[in-house]
Length: 162
Image (tube, rainbow, N blue to C red; front, side):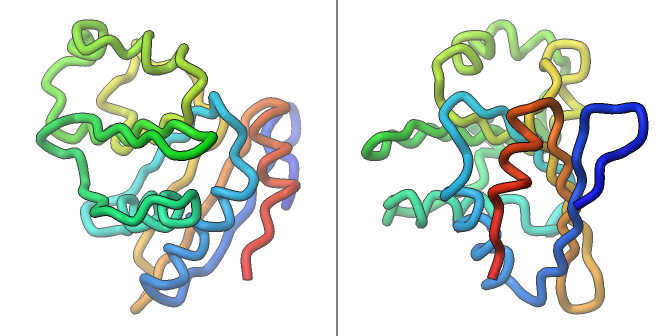
């Protein structure tokens, strides 16, 4: 992990050999993400964004299906001791639509908010505590994590991936 000069951000790169490794990263994040975290997930279609969220939710005790909320825009999960909102903004036509769907209420609820395609909400979404960029690398993936501010940096310090 290295701090970038002149910014309050820590970064980390993790190689993910397969889908199971991507889910394992999600599980590792579940152990260190505090309530109220805002996490941006970036990557091309099929890069593993929803797979990572699935691993996180499974580690938090969710045993039902985990779907990409591409058409619904948000899927909410209430788990023992934790609430998580998973957004997919891929089909968002205008960032202002986030205001109409109550984005401020979601972000102010104390829940963990995981947002795929956050660039579609540019100008409306605040800065994320944690940004995760997933990219295809051969048969696997590479996850580049960036912790913004104290909360994001603390998550990266505490994150242990097997």
